[in-house]
Length: 224
Image (cartoon, rainbow, N blue to C red; front, top):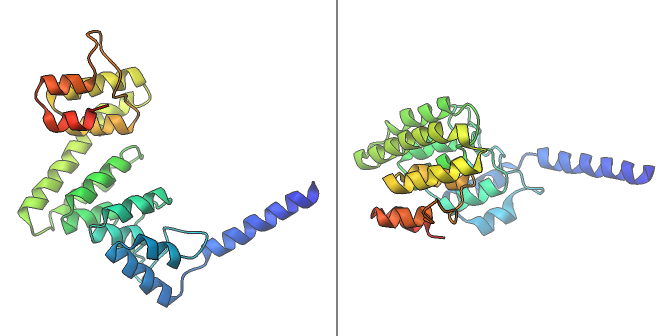
């Protein structure tokens, strides 16, 4: 038994040591290139094992999620987050993946990251920083879209956070969002566990309510 415990401690130590190793300059460049181009297969082969998705890739302490977000690689952003990337990680300039996506003008990346990190604490500062970053975007169309996304998510989070752990109230909020066409509240409620199949006293799901009120895009989201 003692030998097994000792072996376990040794293995954990080895794994920790390997994970803390920094990639070589050549590996850094190859990983950076894979992130910029969204090459998930290549990235999986290049990163040190065990995989540390928060590894630094240059002197500015930019990281894989930063480069994926900065280059509009949504599939890779999702892959990195599922692999354990820290969504609120900052580089030396204080930039997160959300901030660089906002500044670069990528609404899909911004929406995805807002949805994924909405349950984190102390988000006010980061989301406000993302708004400031978005103002640096030179495209008025994407800038305005991103600013509206951030405002919508801030409002949705404020509405739903007090009932986050109450399934009944979350389901009620989902149906209310379906009635009034509030897509962002519906997105967030679903991500926090609201049920598409739960029915009100009139035997209506959120999907039924969205269709009744002619919110077609929302109905697609809510279809069981």
